Image (tube, rainbow, N blue to C red):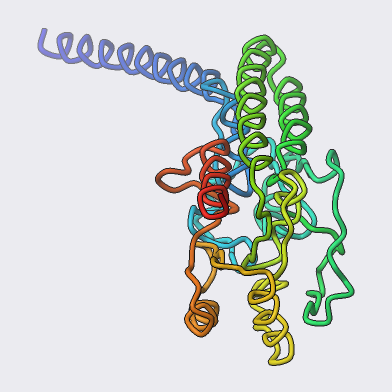
Length: 306
């Protein structure tokens, strides 16, 4: 009798384990099926645009931490690990974010979308004697997102790629895309109206990143402290900058939060002018979207030149 009870108990436990195992497998399969498709964007402006269009249907990841500079950034081992299974990498291109290759090359089956291929690029000023091109310099200015005109093309390309990735969500993506573009068009009109009202349109910037922004709003860059990030101006070039500031009655030198400001602060002190911020990347408080970032920059320039 006792043996029969033990045998029955063992049988019961075995059957329970089988059903539990099946249930667990089914749960794991269901979770796997419900897992969101993963994509990544190299810099915050591209990340935000992708996030706006993807909504809650796609898992969008940012590679470059807010506050870091793409010119000096190095990918960590933990980032490579966390971005495994990523299907698409949206990159800015033109060697601004070539470090993405360190991640994408280790992700089997991933695809990299170079968004610089869908915009009209501006050539860098190769005649500037202080501009010593990096060995990976493409010859083109990679900061194209600072002109809203280019963002229309970028957002359309992101939309198209997301639809290919998840065709069942096409209408959802399209609705989000239209909302983003409509808001950007409205703000772009507002920004241009502000800038067009200015009589003084001369600005002095920190590094050679603001050509697209200046073109979009009909501004004139009269001086660039670092034509390429990390390049200190030569004594001769520094003297030319001082002359440009005085001749153009510049009252403000614009710096960038991602780059060292010590040298330009010395110049500002010597010239008796103030320092203010232009932020090309955003992703921090007050600039938590592409549109907020552009709004911040336009309002800073407008407020100081009006």
